[in-house]
Length: 257
Length: 91
Ligand SMILES: C[S@@+](CC[C@H](N)C(=O)[O-])C[C@H]1O[C@@H](n2cnc3c(N)ncnc32)[C@H](O)[C@@H]1O
Image 1 (cartoon, chains in turn blue, yellow):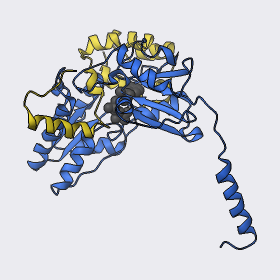
Image 2: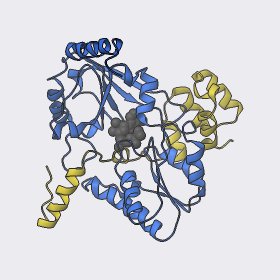
Image 3: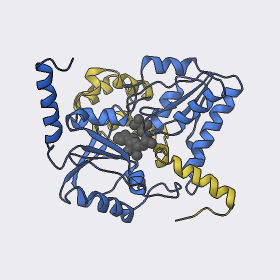
Image 4: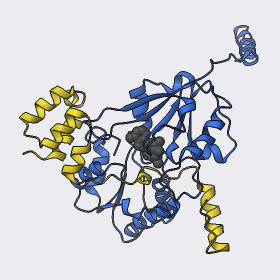
């Protein structure tokens, strides 16, 4: 579906929607869902399967089951998700895997994700310094290596540290844990960006710049993606450069073909 | 009065409307006989009047989330379920 109503849906994705027998909708914006309903007479919202206190993994497995039940009934099924269906999203990948394992044809159409909008709206090129992306909780649960000379993009920060997978948001103490972890690599005054892409075409992107240390205390929605620009300059790797230089010399003298 | 969702789609797909100033957009919308709610939302950049007009409930926050990076948790959860039905932790 892409992020913004009217702007991002590809012609091919729209055609998949129109030609499906059944359409399932996992969208972040109720008005975008209404727009989707215009494209097909049988659009089924996946929204009602969420419940506070119920593990989201259960919900996502239910989604897979719902879609697969229609596939097994011989229907052409189209799952519509906001952004890119395969970016930081579990069930679209899973349902394709399950369908293929059962011998059905299935594939994913790419879409314009929050990540794509972020690069455009914030003027960031992920190739400039490199760019790491993490689901915020995963960064806490596992030993990871951050590279503060690259961009760091954190997803789902509003839910950071939720081990139950059953809450709709976690609070300041959880974000404090994230802050403490990030403070190992980034100074407290480092300017970070809280970003929300427009989902309606009458909206502007929301861009808030704050000091890293304030992260636990600012209001944050589930839609906010957090960006940490590089905090240190790239450091030349002298050993590798020397090795490459030696190779260049060999090439010049014709030893290496 | 023109249909609001149709107008939103028209704005979303039009290069001059999508990035028009609030003033321009509200002028165009008035000419197009948009609903007062859409005109107000476009002028302010705030969706609230639209949600009222369309009766759109905000989608649950978790609608916005999925669970990548938690595949291991899934296995754990299954084991927990197998070992004890009441093992669900609430921490
Ligand atoms: C489960 S992921 C889904 C991402 C989606 N598949 C995509 O392609 O953008 C949810 C996370 O995406 C990000 N996100 C969702 N909506 C957003 C928006 N409107 N602007 C910026 N980031 C958004 C937030 O980090 C949120 O926690």
